[in-house]
Every structure is written in structure tokens, then in C-alpha cells.
Image (tube, rainbow, N blue to C red; front, side, top):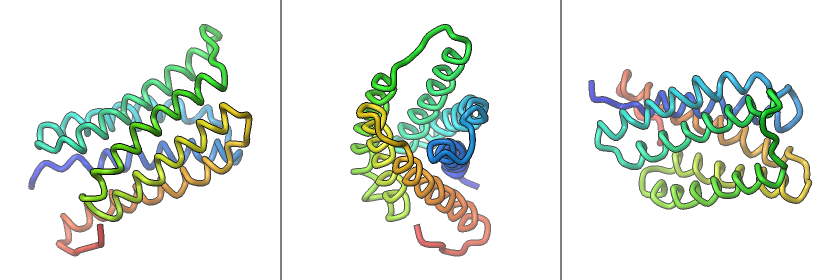
Length: 175
């Protein structure tokens, strides 16, 4: 079997994004996301990124290691705030999310050549980052960004599942 860390990276991204999006919508509290941010969204995705570079896939390597680092930073921010060591304003977090939206936007451009499903993941992700970032900067509700994030997570789970199912069963789920 060929080395393909994409299903792991996408699954880690999807699950962590799904849970955080539920918190952004107001369905659950966000504290549970901290552990996910470190271990599944952070470490598993970062590892998938390094393995993607080993498999000579620069796009996946850049994406997974970058978003794994995002989750590690997100978890660290949450820990600092919970310990009272540092506090971050909504505008600071919003600016960070907008910056991630910019990165995600330019990652979306090459994703258009990879496949429709993955390009939809990146499209909904940059929309999520911008919606959440601007909501924090301007004091709006996080529900729109949370809803787009849920859609993004479901799309990422689909791509992860399709990659595995296509590899194991030889079937061609559309990607």
C-alpha cells in the first residue's frame, strides 16, 4: 500500500472542527475542544503533514502541518486563558482567524486542480475563518461561522472516508 496520510489528517481536522463548530453555534461548551486541539486536531494532523511531505505531496504536507499547528496554537491559547496567564481580546483572536482565512484562501486555489470535494473543504474553511474572524472583530454572533464550520467538517469527513473506501474497496466515490 502507498503511504497516504490524507485520511488521518482529514479525519483529525473534521472531528476537531465539528466539535468546535458545535461550540461556536452554542450547542456545547468549548472546553472539550482543548484536548482535541492538542492531540487529534494538532498532533495527528501535524504528523499527517510530515508524512505527506515524505510521500512527496507538498500540498497536503503544507495543509496538514499548518492546520495541525493552528490547532496546537488554539489549544495553547485556551490553556493560557484558563490559567489566567494571558488574556486575548476578541479582536486579537479575530485578526488571527482572518489571517488563517487568507492562508486558507490561497490554499483553496491549488485545491481546485486536485478535486471538487477537497476544493469544497477549502472553500468552506476559508469562509469559516473569515466569518468567525470578522464576527469577533466586530462583535457579531459566531453562529454563521459555526454553521459553515459544521459543513466544512462534514465535507472533510466525506473526503477522508472516500479516500479510505476507494483504497480498500477499489470503488470510486467521487472526489
